[in-house]
Length: 306
Image (cartoon, rainbow, N blue to C red; front, side):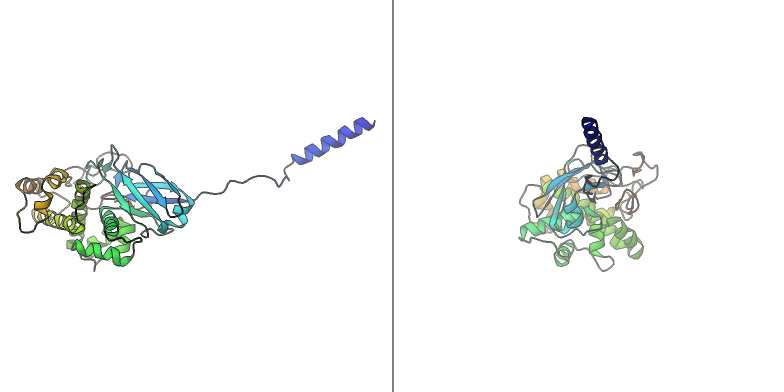
């Protein structure tokens, strides 16, 4: 009897330990997310990396049709101002606003630019800001640093908010298109050209002043030839020409305002290649004349598309 009673007690203890009232369950800590975008129009299929001041780092998965990639990391989500971002050359990367091949592109977001609770975008201008900071040994971006780069590019910032453009380009450009169409086109053209300038000068010791001059001279010629930029005056389609080879071959000439632009560059500017805007959901051409700032916004894909 004693043996049976002991067995019954032990069984009861085991069953009690496995009951629904057990408070020893382990919960997995929630990992927060942060949305990053690659933008010059929205760039689909580009991947990258991030690194933070506390030593944390990680990969950024390929962006979707809105140029967005959602990263799971608590430091990046809660303290993004301590982190830097870099999108790297990725085979197949494409500008969704004009179907331009962007497989050789590299864009950066410098430390201090991102804000918790708000998506951020890596653009040609944020990348130039990162270079400006590196050249001038500035460790953290602030509004005065960003303003200096816009000034170097001769971009009139009186009609739009710099911080809004750097974080949510689509929102800023939509407002600017109505508020000041001329500045809107100028900003689009300089962003478009600067992307190729950055690509052509990657790894070289070109000064930021020369890069700004090449950007300004080429974009001015582009706007003169195509007043409705980003649409081509020749066929009304979105311009997707690449000037990388021209900048590689003749950067010093183009950077010198006293010299004429090379004939080959002038020809590309007047007769640029064109493409089509691509639907971010289907991945197919929209069928229209494209142009503008593309598709996607804060409610599309969790970020700021273009």
